[in-house]
Length: 220
Image (cartoon, rainbow, N blue to C red; front, side, top):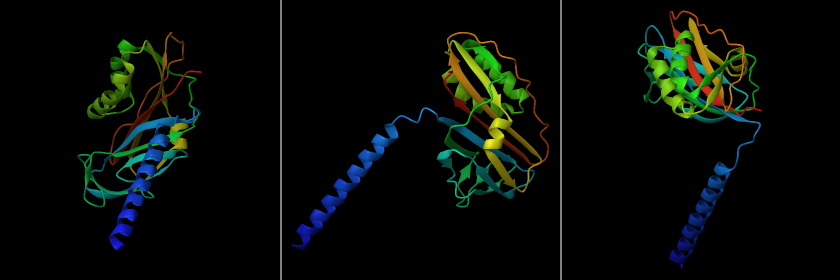
Protein backbone atom coordinates (compact mmCIF):
# COMPACT_ATOMS: atom_id res chain seq x y z
CA UNK A 1 0.00 0.00 0.00
CA UNK A 2 2.74 2.42 0.99
CA UNK A 3 4.72 1.54 -2.14
CA UNK A 4 1.65 2.24 -4.28
CA UNK A 5 1.12 5.65 -2.65
CA UNK A 6 4.81 6.52 -3.02
CA UNK A 7 4.72 5.51 -6.69
CA UNK A 8 1.68 7.73 -7.32
CA UNK A 9 3.39 10.66 -5.58
CA UNK A 10 6.52 10.23 -7.69
CA UNK A 11 4.46 10.05 -10.90
CA UNK A 12 2.54 13.18 -9.91
CA UNK A 13 5.76 15.06 -9.21
CA UNK A 14 7.24 14.01 -12.56
CA UNK A 15 4.10 15.16 -14.40
CA UNK A 16 4.12 18.46 -12.51
CA UNK A 17 7.79 19.15 -13.31
CA UNK A 18 7.20 18.26 -16.96
CA UNK A 19 4.28 20.68 -17.14
CA UNK A 20 6.36 23.43 -15.56
CA UNK A 21 9.12 22.80 -18.10
CA UNK A 22 6.68 23.01 -21.01
CA UNK A 23 5.21 26.28 -19.73
CA UNK A 24 8.72 27.76 -19.28
CA UNK A 25 9.69 26.71 -22.81
CA UNK A 26 6.55 28.30 -24.26
CA UNK A 27 7.16 31.54 -22.37
CA UNK A 28 10.79 31.66 -23.49
CA UNK A 29 9.67 31.40 -27.11
CA UNK A 30 7.02 34.08 -26.78
CA UNK A 31 7.81 37.26 -28.75
CA UNK A 32 9.35 40.09 -26.79
CA UNK A 33 7.38 43.27 -26.33
CA UNK A 34 8.14 45.19 -29.57
CA UNK A 35 8.81 48.33 -27.54
CA UNK A 36 11.74 46.63 -25.77
CA UNK A 37 15.17 45.68 -27.01
CA UNK A 38 17.92 43.53 -25.54
CA UNK A 39 21.01 45.26 -24.20
CA UNK A 40 23.43 42.60 -25.31
CA UNK A 41 26.61 41.48 -23.65
CA UNK A 42 27.63 44.51 -21.70
CA UNK A 43 30.89 43.22 -20.21
CA UNK A 44 32.86 45.05 -17.55
CA UNK A 45 36.63 44.73 -17.24
CA UNK A 46 38.38 45.75 -14.02
CA UNK A 47 42.02 46.81 -14.18
CA UNK A 48 43.27 47.80 -10.71
CA UNK A 49 46.93 48.63 -10.27
CA UNK A 50 47.24 45.99 -7.54
CA UNK A 51 44.93 43.11 -6.55
CA UNK A 52 42.03 44.47 -4.53
CA UNK A 53 38.47 43.89 -3.42
CA UNK A 54 35.98 45.69 -5.69
CA UNK A 55 32.22 46.13 -5.45
CA UNK A 56 30.32 46.94 -8.65
CA UNK A 57 26.67 47.91 -8.57
CA UNK A 58 24.46 48.33 -11.62
CA UNK A 59 21.33 50.46 -11.62
CA UNK A 60 19.34 49.74 -14.78
CA UNK A 61 15.65 50.34 -15.50
CA UNK A 62 15.57 47.20 -17.61
CA UNK A 63 14.91 43.64 -16.53
CA UNK A 64 18.14 41.70 -16.09
CA UNK A 65 17.95 38.53 -18.15
CA UNK A 66 21.41 37.11 -17.42
CA UNK A 67 24.44 37.93 -15.28
CA UNK A 68 27.81 36.26 -14.72
CA UNK A 69 28.81 35.95 -11.96
CA UNK A 70 25.32 35.97 -10.49
CA UNK A 71 24.32 39.52 -9.58
CA UNK A 72 23.13 39.85 -5.97
CA UNK A 73 22.70 43.51 -5.07
CA UNK A 74 26.06 44.05 -6.74
CA UNK A 75 29.15 42.06 -7.63
CA UNK A 76 31.70 41.62 -4.84
CA UNK A 77 34.92 40.39 -6.40
CA UNK A 78 38.70 40.39 -6.17
CA UNK A 79 40.15 42.11 -9.24
CA UNK A 80 43.72 41.70 -10.53
CA UNK A 81 45.75 43.95 -12.87
CA UNK A 82 45.75 41.28 -15.63
CA UNK A 83 41.91 41.58 -15.79
CA UNK A 84 41.37 38.35 -13.83
CA UNK A 85 38.32 38.56 -11.57
CA UNK A 86 37.58 36.14 -8.73
CA UNK A 87 34.09 35.94 -7.30
CA UNK A 88 33.25 35.15 -3.69
CA UNK A 89 33.57 31.41 -4.33
CA UNK A 90 36.98 31.78 -5.99
CA UNK A 91 35.70 31.16 -9.52
CA UNK A 92 37.67 33.05 -12.16
CA UNK A 93 36.18 35.38 -14.78
CA UNK A 94 37.70 37.69 -17.38
CA UNK A 95 34.91 40.23 -16.98
CA UNK A 96 31.53 40.86 -15.37
CA UNK A 97 28.68 40.11 -17.74
CA UNK A 98 25.09 41.30 -17.86
CA UNK A 99 22.17 41.56 -20.26
CA UNK A 100 18.81 43.26 -19.84
CA UNK A 101 15.60 44.04 -21.66
CA UNK A 102 15.03 47.76 -21.99
CA UNK A 103 12.67 50.28 -23.56
CA UNK A 104 15.23 53.10 -23.68
CA UNK A 105 15.01 55.65 -26.47
CA UNK A 106 18.33 56.13 -28.20
CA UNK A 107 20.02 59.30 -29.41
CA UNK A 108 20.25 58.91 -33.18
CA UNK A 109 20.82 62.55 -34.09
CA UNK A 110 24.40 61.64 -35.03
CA UNK A 111 25.96 58.45 -36.23
CA UNK A 112 27.36 56.58 -39.20
CA UNK A 113 26.03 54.74 -42.23
CA UNK A 114 28.50 51.97 -43.05
CA UNK A 115 28.38 49.41 -45.83
CA UNK A 116 28.41 45.89 -44.43
CA UNK A 117 31.69 45.11 -46.18
CA UNK A 118 33.32 48.14 -44.53
CA UNK A 119 32.10 47.37 -41.01
CA UNK A 120 35.22 45.50 -39.81
CA UNK A 121 37.55 48.39 -40.65
CA UNK A 122 35.06 50.91 -39.25
CA UNK A 123 34.79 49.10 -35.91
CA UNK A 124 38.54 48.71 -35.55
CA UNK A 125 39.12 52.42 -36.11
CA UNK A 126 36.16 53.66 -34.08
CA UNK A 127 36.73 51.39 -31.07
CA UNK A 128 40.36 52.47 -30.87
CA UNK A 129 39.25 56.12 -30.82
CA UNK A 130 36.74 55.24 -28.09
CA UNK A 131 39.53 53.88 -25.91
CA UNK A 132 39.25 50.10 -26.20
CA UNK A 133 42.48 48.11 -26.11
CA UNK A 134 43.44 45.74 -28.93
CA UNK A 135 42.20 42.78 -26.89
CA UNK A 136 38.89 44.49 -26.07
CA UNK A 137 38.41 45.50 -29.71
CA UNK A 138 39.03 41.91 -30.79
CA UNK A 139 36.39 40.59 -28.39
CA UNK A 140 33.88 43.28 -29.39
CA UNK A 141 34.38 42.56 -33.09
CA UNK A 142 34.26 38.80 -32.59
CA UNK A 143 30.81 39.14 -31.05
CA UNK A 144 29.22 41.76 -33.32
CA UNK A 145 30.86 41.59 -36.74
CA UNK A 146 29.35 38.27 -37.93
CA UNK A 147 25.89 39.81 -37.51
CA UNK A 148 26.78 42.99 -39.40
CA UNK A 149 29.28 42.32 -42.17
CA UNK A 150 26.78 40.86 -44.64
CA UNK A 151 24.21 43.65 -44.29
CA UNK A 152 23.81 46.10 -47.12
CA UNK A 153 24.23 49.02 -44.73
CA UNK A 154 24.58 49.36 -40.96
CA UNK A 155 23.32 52.47 -39.20
CA UNK A 156 25.56 52.84 -36.14
CA UNK A 157 25.45 55.27 -33.24
CA UNK A 158 27.58 55.00 -30.12
CA UNK A 159 25.53 56.01 -27.10
CA UNK A 160 27.07 58.27 -24.48
CA UNK A 161 25.03 59.96 -21.77
CA UNK A 162 21.73 58.41 -22.94
CA UNK A 163 23.11 54.99 -22.08
CA UNK A 164 25.26 55.89 -19.08
CA UNK A 165 22.60 57.90 -17.23
CA UNK A 166 20.04 55.14 -17.67
CA UNK A 167 22.43 52.32 -16.73
CA UNK A 168 24.53 53.65 -13.90
CA UNK A 169 27.61 51.89 -12.61
CA UNK A 170 28.87 52.47 -9.09
CA UNK A 171 32.33 51.05 -8.46
CA UNK A 172 33.98 50.95 -5.03
CA UNK A 173 36.76 51.91 -4.65
CA UNK A 174 36.22 54.64 -7.22
CA UNK A 175 38.20 54.08 -10.44
CA UNK A 176 40.53 56.68 -11.89
CA UNK A 177 39.36 56.05 -15.46
CA UNK A 178 36.00 54.84 -16.76
CA UNK A 179 35.38 53.97 -20.42
CA UNK A 180 31.90 52.81 -21.44
CA UNK A 181 31.21 51.97 -25.09
CA UNK A 182 27.68 51.04 -26.13
CA UNK A 183 26.85 50.62 -29.81
CA UNK A 184 23.32 50.82 -31.19
CA UNK A 185 22.85 49.67 -34.77
CA UNK A 186 20.19 48.86 -37.32
CA UNK A 187 20.14 47.24 -40.72
CA UNK A 188 19.23 49.43 -43.69
CA UNK A 189 18.70 48.56 -47.33
CA UNK A 190 19.66 52.06 -48.41
CA UNK A 191 22.23 54.65 -47.36
CA UNK A 192 21.19 57.28 -44.85
CA UNK A 193 22.80 60.68 -44.41
CA UNK A 194 23.72 61.25 -40.74
CA UNK A 195 25.88 63.93 -39.13
CA UNK A 196 28.99 62.00 -38.02
CA UNK A 197 29.71 61.54 -34.35
CA UNK A 198 32.92 62.81 -32.78
CA UNK A 199 34.58 59.88 -31.04
CA UNK A 200 37.07 60.29 -28.20
CA UNK A 201 38.11 58.70 -24.92
CA UNK A 202 39.92 59.63 -21.73
CA UNK A 203 43.51 58.54 -21.27
CA UNK A 204 43.70 55.24 -19.42
CA UNK A 205 45.48 55.81 -16.11
CA UNK A 206 45.30 54.28 -12.64
CA UNK A 207 42.46 51.93 -11.72
CA UNK A 208 40.57 51.61 -15.01
CA UNK A 209 37.07 50.24 -15.62
CA UNK A 210 36.04 49.42 -19.20
CA UNK A 211 32.62 48.33 -20.41
CA UNK A 212 31.34 47.51 -23.87
CA UNK A 213 28.02 46.27 -25.18
CA UNK A 214 25.48 46.88 -27.88
CA UNK A 215 21.91 46.72 -29.07
CA UNK A 216 20.28 45.98 -32.41
CA UNK A 217 17.10 47.89 -33.14
CA UNK A 218 14.74 48.26 -36.09
CA UNK A 219 14.59 51.47 -38.08
CA UNK A 220 11.16 53.10 -37.94
